[in-house]
Structures are given as C-alpha cells and as structure tokens.
Length: 139
Image 1 (cartoon, rainbow, N blue to C red):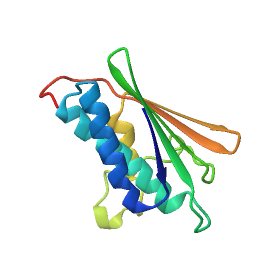
Image 2 (image 1 turned 60 degrees about the vertical axis):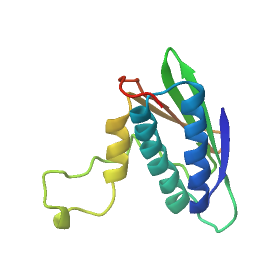
Image 3 (image 1 turned 120 degrees about the vertical axis):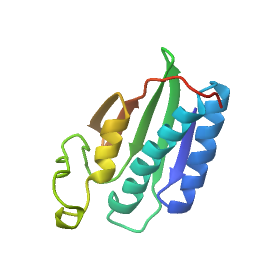
Image 4 (image 1 turned 180 degrees about the horizontal axis):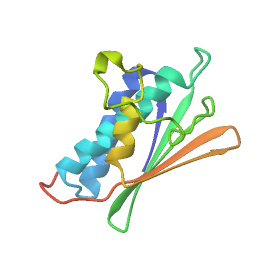
C-alpha cells in the first residue's frame, strides 16, 4: 500500500486512516496498529515541522508492506538531508527542565521499532523501518 501525504498537519488523518486500512487488510493486532501509528505520526510530524525550508507543498510518501509477517515501512520525502540515526540520544538521566529541547520523539521511534535505516538518494530521504508483531488483540 502507498500513501501520499502533503506536508500539512491535517494530512495526519489520512495517515491514520491508511494505517487502519492496512492493519485490517493484514489482520494486524490492534496494539501493533497503535504502536505503528504513534511511530509514523512522530516521523511525519517531524518532517512537516522541520524538513522544509519553504512554505510550498511537498509530498511525503509512505509505503507499507507485510514481509515475513512483519510490517515494513518506507517513508520518502524531499526535505533537507536528515538521518535520524545520527541524531544524538536525549539526556534521559537529567531533570526534564534541564534537558535541551528535542530528541525525545526520535528516541521513541528508535526504541519502538526493530530495525531502522536511512539513506539519501537523489535528493530524497528514504527511511525504512521494520516492526515485529508481538501478538495480542486483533484489529
């Protein structure tokens, strides 16, 4: 399945509906759908808020597949180069008010998926992620 969103926050609703349809078609457990939705919401929100230097409309493409019983996702954007794997981990051992702002969302994404890979190809960011299914309630 492929979803195309614009770099507008209101398009997050399209993402949620597309993920629900994907989960239903592949009988993903509701708990896994919720986790995948949180991860992709964080990724796409970061793209919308930080990836673009202009106010023009940009496409964010999300490709969803099930391989070996695991959801595989590719997020493609034409925003500024950014490798979330190279971003420093947040300082979790300090008081929240003493920590620099930012980084918690990426930390959440890295901890919530089983594999994460970034490549920059032809002026586009390609972020691949894989999430094992842990079982539980069905959609």
